[in-house]
Image 1 (cartoon, rainbow, N blue to C red):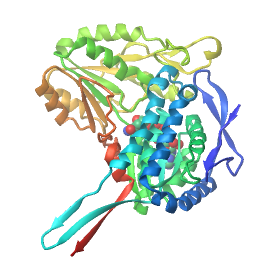
Image 2 (image 1 turned 90 degrees about the vertical axis):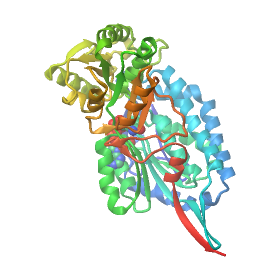
Image 3 (image 1 turned 30 degrees about the vertical axis):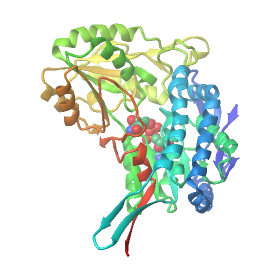
Image 4 (image 1 turned 120 degrees about the vertical axis):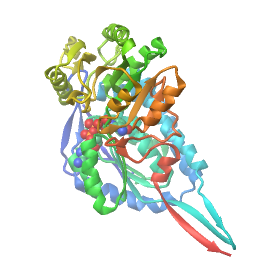
Amino acid sequence: MEIIKNYIDGTLVEPKSGAYLDNFNPATGQVYSQIPDSAEEDVNDAVKAAKLAYPSWSKTAKETRSEILAKIAMLIEKNLDRLALAESMDNGKPVSLAKQVDIPRAATNFNFFATAILHYASESHAMENGVINYTLREPIGVAGCISPWNLPLYLFTWKIAPALAAGNTVVAKPSEVTPMTAFLLSELCIEAGLPAGVLNIVHGLGNKVGAAITTHPDIPMISFTGGTATGAQIAKEAAPMFKKLSLELGGKNPNIIFADCDFEKMLQVTLKSSFSNQGEICLCGSRIFIEKPLYEKFKTAFVEATEKLKVGNPQSGDSDLGAIVSEEHMDKILSYIELAKEEGGSILAGGNRVSLSGEQEKGWYLEPTIIEGLGHECRTNQEEIFGPVVTLIPFDSEEEVIEMANSTKYGLSSTIWTKDLNTAHRVAENLHVGIAWINCWLLRDLRTPFGGTKSSGVGREGGFEALHFFTEPKNVCIKY
Ligand code: NAD
């Protein structure tokens, strides 16, 4: 059984208490490794190491920082198969998805910010009479990075890479549900020659390790991705300490389908935006709004295509959906399916746990589920389920669908399907979201601002937005 260790001050160490938590493989429902059950004292050690490493790392030439980050990226690429398998075992996602998406993106995150920092420049503002203002964008200190379980290495590195590129040192915590690839990353950082203390990874529970990071007086900035309730808790704790906060939170994204869309393309992508990664992507479209003339055609084709999706062992190449990340999360999704029935919804496809045989007998699998017949204001259509569950809602007019789409407390992303460019632009403009995809989904240019509005978050990640977050601007005014 693999024993995960913390990565503090350049070495792999046990938690001070010696206590460990069980780590499960969702595909089998069995414990397969142990995670440090770290506490405040481990976070204190990590912060101490990060503070010690900061003066040197922040003054290291950006070219050198860039080279080290690029080396980490190269090592991630070199270990693609091993990391993809580890991600799949830890999270339950199909190994093919981890190989195509999660792990390549983790390498890209390091490469992207390794090069972005070389192009990051600051402004100057000239005044009359020989006065110039110039802006220094300086690293801040020790960054706290906290990430969730759905895209474990992908989202973990999405925070760490810009923080390090900008010259900060980092204390990071991956989700306790999926800690394995963060642990493997710490080994790769040692191999890449990242100086001791520059990145520290402390494993453990949110209310212990996460809370210790959030409230530590020597961590002036927190970059968090996870649930809205956790984000609110972090904001409450960090606000009186005036920490910089970047919060990427939950969503209940609308997928809006107009009758004039390219039907085949829309159907193919809608299957993905509904059920990829078992629906456990914050950007999945869980409320599908269909213009009435297309409703029956869409419903028939979508149900038929969904029923062909294979739920199976994440490690076999032909599984479209793997296992749900934890038993607790599976039960939560099932409880929402029950709620949908109580609220008057009809299950058109799925709705049940899937029982596999052999080693996967005790794994946590769910059928991709389609529900219709619910109003947009019921709990099923307002609360984040974060699983392979979507609802179908017909609409008559553009105004009506915009109102329904905007009716939740969330505002992360949306997808719009239409051939009419005017409709597409107008709807995108009127949706309260951070990202609107038109006739596509999940296309990501890492230079673009990424984040949500309302209860989906505060701040933006991506490109120079991330480098702005991880630096403090200082205006210097000189008269000559
Ligand atoms: P979560 O909020 O339960 O946990 C996220 C992280 O926060 C974990 O590392 C956890 O240990 C830690 N944590 C928990 N309590 C804490 C506390 N009191 N203080 C500090 N840290 C704490 O979220 P999850 O269940 O891991 O992830 C699923 C959620 O993440 C969904 O709501 C999903 O929409 C959201 N998400 C959002 C984005 C985005 O970019 N907006 C991306 C992925 C996932």
